[in-house]
Image (cartoon, rainbow, N blue to C red; front, side, top):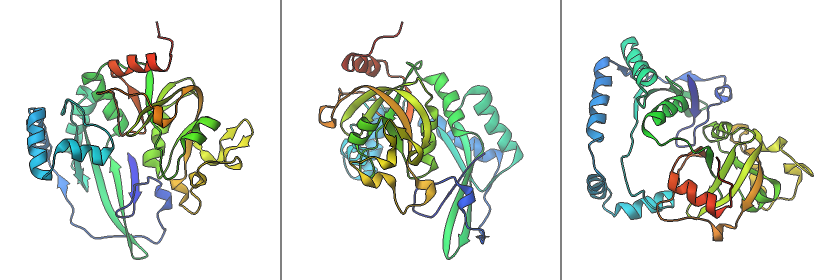
Length: 305
C-alpha cells in the first residue's frame, strides 16, 4: 500500500517516518465496508457514465450558481474541455475493508482494468494537532495505467509535464540550468519518477500553453544535490531564491529532473490552440493526437518513424 500523512487542511505527504513518535490514535467510529457498498459504488458509476456534457453543465451551474466555463477557468487557469465525462474512476473511502470487498476491488482492477480503488484513513493526535493518514489498497498509478489501456488512445511516446511556475519556481532558472521540478510533498514529487533518461518531454505553463521541449538527462533527485555544469544548483545564482524552500519541512523540498532543452520559448509566446491537451498532473503520458502533431510542428521535432 501507499501511505500518506498530512496535517489537516494542508498538502499531503507520505513520509510516515516524519510523524512524531509520541502520537496517539484518535478514537473514531469505524466505517467498515461490505460487498453491498462496492455494489452501490458500481451502481453510482453506471449512472455517472450516462451523463452527457450538456447535463453536466446544467447540474454544475445549478450547484455553483455560476457559469461552469467561468468557474473552471478561475479554478484551473485554463479552458474547460469540449467533451466532459469521457472517463471516470471510483474511489471507496473507508477506515477498513472487509475481505470480500477487497477481493472484488482487486478483481475488477487487476483482471478487467476497471478504474476502482480504496483509500483507508486514520486520524492521529500529537502535540495538540491532528494528523490524517491515508493508504491506498492498490497502487493508484497502476490502477490508472490499466484503465487507460482500455479507454484511451495509444501513447505517443512523449510526456507532458507541468512547469508549475509561481511562488517557488522560475522558468528562467529551468531554462538556464536545465531542469523541471516539483515540490511541496511526496504526493507531487513522486510524479517526477515516471521520467527516465532519454524520455522526451513537452513542458506546459498553466494558463499560457507549451513553453519547452527537451530530453531527460537525469532522473528525479532532490534539487539540493542536482549538479549543473558549474556545480550544485543551489550554489548558482537563481532568479527565484524561494526555490530552495528554506525553513520548510524536508519532505516539502523541491525535486528536479534534468532536461536537455531542444527548444524553449518565453511564457508570453507559449504554443497553444483551442482544445489543446492540458492536465493538472505534474507528469503524464501525452496521448492526444492533435496536440502531439501541433507540438511536433511548433517545436520542430523530428517525427518518429
